[in-house]
Length: 429
Image (cartoon, rainbow, N blue to C red; front, side, top):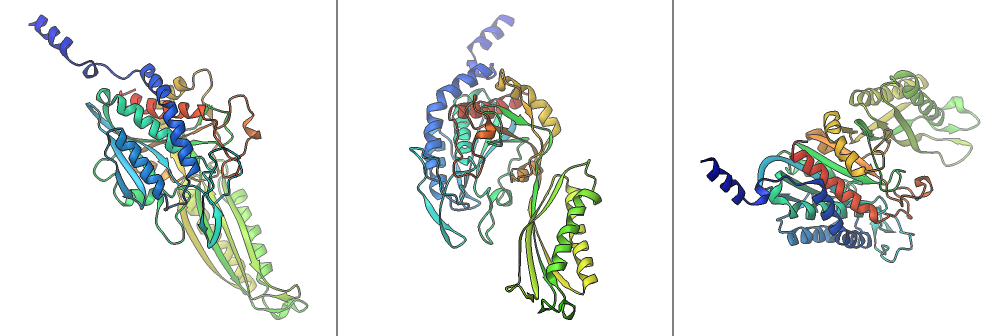
């Protein structure tokens, strides 16, 4: 009986008994590199603004179908989702990329530079993948190709998420990760974990940077109208000066981060980016308007700061005889890397990184709506250096610059990161 059982085992296909090895993944990533570069250059040359990624969506879906997958399109306007079904039972893990470009006129001089234009806020503008989303899409497609090549050996399945409008939907439209979730991409099958990569952020070229816990900030906005009473600038006592009141509010807000919340728990920022009021130097106006942004990393602190801002503004205005209208816009929550998932996957990242260390990055005060997925399931988001390995990243153009670019050999590193994270997670490592 033992001999018959051994013969049966030997007759089984190899994929039914073997796990995918890191060496196998790395060889496939190298094989995929030419395709990945080709995809990246097409995306770079054909950028589209948020919620308008029509050609991008078609290109993604076409590439996935060529891999034998069945993408679902039209999610959250232009999003695409596909599933790689593994040959063996196991969990579902998701990998995600963003798709949209920015209203930036490219100045890189690349032979495949964007010449696209579009309307943004009523103005004609150039459109560019100035934040690196072209690279994210190419790396995720490359990983899809690698994982599809070994799907019979996968002990579980992979959800591929191509998300529009990460930079924010235009006007009053819905979009981005929030709409992807709202339209049910996780309703039928909830992934056990979701992974994402962002290029840039002053990381050494081709190297990985990540941290457990808060990684990127929540980004909220505010608008405030301070209503006084207009009078002659030479006789301020005959009116209520909203400019002075607005100045007092701005200064009071700066004490919230420095004196009223626990600075040892997490950093926070309140920035007023626009102040408008008055039309003539000797006329005190009726109204001053201000707009700005709030950045936080802790959910409870976030709410506390919102309440303190409105309360202090109303108190200052009331003391001066003015009135205010305070409008808070809740934006993207903070990206919080799941500590247990970070610990579990750190050996994978160290192996992929090879001779280079995996850097422990400081929390970044910019925002990313990957956080929406990480609120639904365990999430891990990391940064990948975009420049050449021998160039100081501080000398390179930053994300959102018209000169932002990617050293294309680093794309292979991104494919290896995505693919090895998925395989190791499915293998229970």
